[in-house]
Image (cartoon, rainbow, N blue to C red):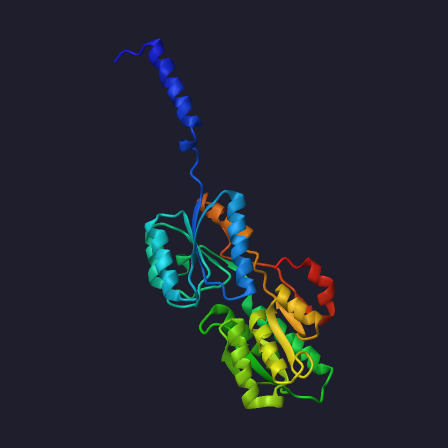
Length: 320
């Protein structure tokens, strides 16, 4: 077919209009994210951070709340695969049982990023990166603080009750392991009771009530795997006529505002920070993965330890 000058001009104009049309602009990154639930102040802050970072970056975020059930997360991940999202991210309820669904994601060529909690899988290539805390080190930090505190009372033994997180979850397993490692060399530090409080304030209170009924004033220390369980337990201690922070030392993990408030009231002795503000790192990592860039297999956030003595000074700086 013979092309005239008019034909060429028309083709050029059409190409320009297509390039300028929003319909043909670069497709926004779509991330499917499955959250554990909304069991604590920490989790609420984590969710807000992810949603806010996605909004600021212009990312299309498909969010699913698993309500602390693994089967709900598996369904959500399969839904994300069916929707052909660009990247799947999730904070796993428990460590094990992910191989099958993650193989499905890999077969669909959809990269997976883990946030906050790790998984145990037979093939490490089933996920591209993990963003989160070193839970074992958090447990060690809690144990080290207690060991140092005990040195101030060298002749006194401490009986410890432990409120564990969700059974089978990475933070529950690792925070227990790290704490035991840190106190192992001190025979005056002994765990006498240990039970899950499922990371919730209500369950923490309920289990602490049971501990108090069975052990009473034999309890010297409460070690809680998160602040919400500790705060629930503090209520139980007070209702039993004891003084939390004095009659029973309270050691917990997360570093949420509620813990700082409890420390300022003298009811909690120390909180080990676990930073929930992972949203910006997740979005940046997902963007890099989608662009074909190499990313670290593990990205660890910086965190600190906050004893009650610094609570008032640090409280205005807390973002969650």
